[in-house]
Amino acid sequence: MNDLKIIDLTPENIGEYGVCGYKDVHKHKELRNKIDWYNDFYPKGLRIKAAISETGEYQGMIEYIPGEFAHRPVNSAGYLFIHCVFVGFKSNFKGKGFASTMIEEVVEEARSQNMSGVAVVTRKGSFMVDHDIFLKHGFEIVDKAKPDFELLVFKFDQNSPSPTFKHDVLGNTQKYQNGVTIIRSVQCPYTEKNVNAMLETAQNKFHLQTQLIDIKDYKTAQQTPSPFGTFCIILDGEVISHHPISNTRFENILRAK
Image (cartoon, rainbow, N blue to C red; front, side, top):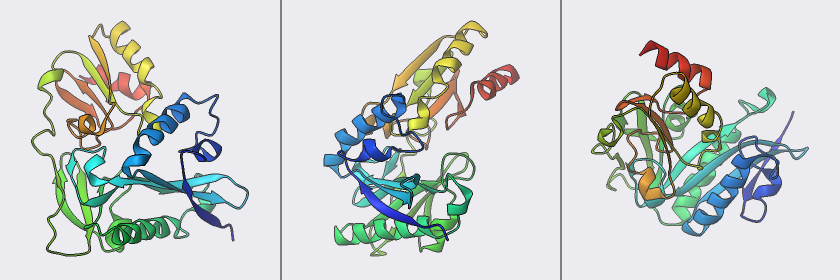
């Protein structure tokens, strides 16, 4: 049976292993940006555990950070906050329990740091993990946000205050009423792909005003109108995508409006 080992990525070795399928520092701007971001937040407690195959191939990861620095619009200070988790670029590594192992390691790390527990935002579909794996490990749903986001928590003490979404900022698009606005952060490497093409499509095919907002800090990420935190597309004040999409999908959405 194929096996994986779980290693800790550091500012020193992240370039060697890559992240999210991006492995060439010289070729992939996404990886260069992620490395810079990791260097910035590593002193604040940001950590990535990577699942590496016996042949040295990157097959998954879990990324987490103290909740006060979470790149989601949540109140989660005192908890470790999981940004993302996945295993299995190759199907033969799926369903082997490696994601569960990484989640359990984060829970134990939070316990060793005397934190209140671990929190995570989930949703069904692309770019975020479904809640099932967390419910299986004793997490509970403590808050929800439209259209289908859930905030889950594993508590060490049930009397600890539960994390919450920042409902006062979710859906607040008053600043983005004209044309297309794309908000993104290099926290997620996939926020680089297709963005320039979508802006050109909006400008040249639909004659819309455009603006691109690059999130530079956790405070800005926590004020974004989408629960995803690190990416959204807004059209005339309406969030039309909470996660990265293709230029073709973007164009089809605009045509339907």
